Image (cartoon, rainbow, N blue to C red; front, side, top):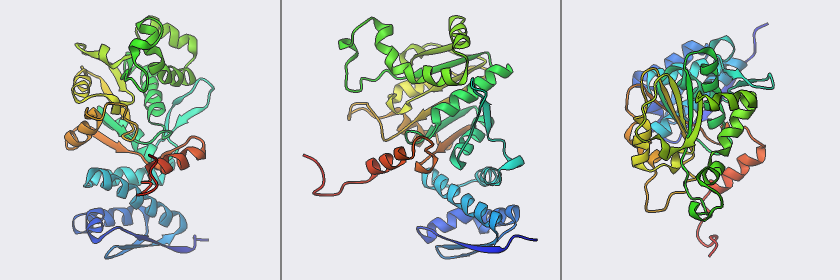
Length: 320
């Protein structure tokens, strides 16, 4: 028995958004309609989707994902549409698996946004992923790098973080330089320890197969056959970001992750991540991926906390 037909309505922000979302001469609308086997009617800022329950639900998810891409990039491409369709179809159309963790459990994309990130990692040499805390940016990037190392596709993983003074000055912290920067690098160690056997991580680090280091230590290096990941990219300056992105050698891949709402740089210093997103958005071979609250996979309370901090408290409600 065929699935009963359902209708889903999607209201857009404006007619201008509809024009960009549906594509030149409704090209993107037709692509989604034909791929998912649904009927789509667009009038002004309203999109009406009719079809089987799975098809209509997938079409609505596809439009929502494309709206997210459009808000961030200001435009859509046919490649964006094809990628999103593969993701919302799921199953055999898109492989969301990233690698196998030390526990034996598979690490995989758990949301449509995360799946777009994984797809970008597979198809581009440079990927910049921006999203809120808990959206899996670092975890997926590290897991993907470990998968490439295990398969022999690369020979080295380099994990990097800016050692930005977030509330404490390095000079006032106890211990030598290694002890001072270790707290900044701890999240990268934690991610690796969940994905790989700790003894293997230790052995790889002793043999320089895996490096975890502050961003400043990247100057002057060129890395071949490597995956190079910059975490907390919002805390890199413009010059540091340029320096990092140009460390890429032959058969290497670069990933930058960050959260634009959690910058620890002084107010007078421009974030290199913000600059890179604006400067590099049209560079061929580079992919920009934006995640949002719907991609947060930590405790559900994290989603509500992030939302509360993103909301403007309004006049009269600010603390003095």
